Image (tube, rainbow, N blue to C red; front, top):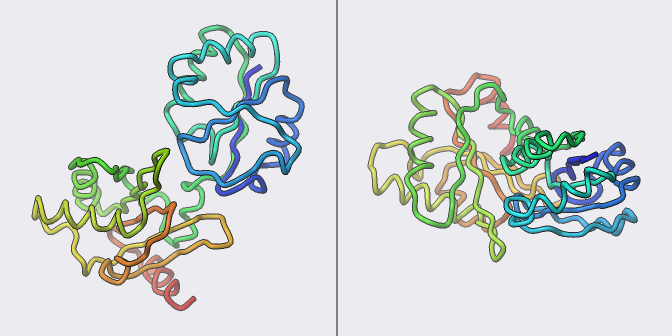
Length: 241
């Protein structure tokens, strides 16, 4: 049996009781931390896991699946286990080998978005703002705004660095300066959601020019589309906290 188990948003306290109990009964326990940021320490729960890298799941997944053919194997994933396409691929490979699988879900940035006051069904396509130059985030923003939809921007995570809120906002302004379609400016009001699920969580709604010095990470940026009056009222209330 192969179990894909979500670790939740921030640290080891976010894993579900079901997830923890299942993990502890498994014969082999693996954890990957490259698809999302996670601050936890499983040893605080009495769990010892072997950390695996991208290549272990994308090129050498056979090593894990061979074990799951005969034994119970847990693959622990920050957030919810099926957000990253990598894990869908792992499930497909397991099914091809007739290996039984089980998903144990957990909280992720997507389930936490409701805390912004924005209605989930009004979000459009999601985009990542990477450290390298690409026009993709700008194109997705344009498409979503045409549809009156909110845009969620995930900020890049590498082994060496987490993109800060300020860096992400500056990249969006640079893209506007390049393409000049008047999609976004320093006067645009956006939501920034940093260190979600932690004691240091930051949730702000303000004009970009008021947030350009916010040097926090990990972070997501939301550019609202057309707002329902209740959404607007809730967003304004965030500035009163």
